[in-house]
Picture (cartoon, rainbow, N blue to C red):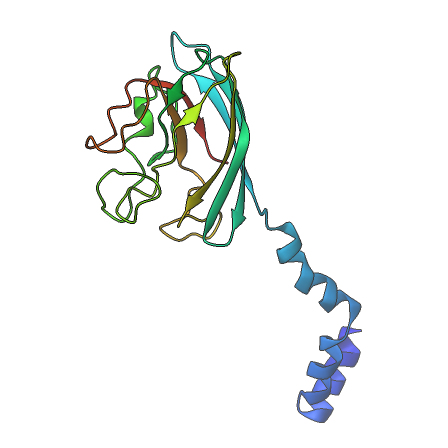
Amino acid sequence: MRSLLLVVLLATGGIACAQTSAVTPETKASAALPEAQTPVGASAELKATVGNGVSGTLKLTPQQGGVQMTGSIKGLTPNTQHGFHIHEKGDCSAPDASSAGAHYNPTGQPHGNPAAAARHLGDMPNIQSDAKGVAKVDLVINDVTLRTGEASDIVGKSVVLHEKVDDYKSQPAGNSGDRIACAVIK
């Protein structure tokens, strides 16, 4: 087949070869391959920091203008609210999750309410546990992306759950207390 294409290329100055290669089944399959192999979403498995019993599974899906996060977190104190943030480093190896670094803030904004324009990109709404200590997560993180390679891409960052409610005012982290669980976004 290559010999025939080379002869056609030489005889026609390349025009026939370009037309022939554009319609082959092999070309169609290879053109579709990268798109089919690109993962669309991401996930994060929350693991408790030392002295805590929190765990959970989170699914992240891109959507217009941000990323939707869904999942469930268990092992919380019943009927409590907790600060919930994306942190700058994808490292949960420290016993207290301090290895996750500060809030994800590539735009250099102050900490704030996730509904406000001036906020860390990693600021998210507080989560609420039910009477059984389980929190259902279904929220949208505005202005972030997944697998784009841009500054707004949160794959490789971490999700951190804090012991107390985020007040959305105190700098730099909303006075939300210790880190009780951490997960790397993969």
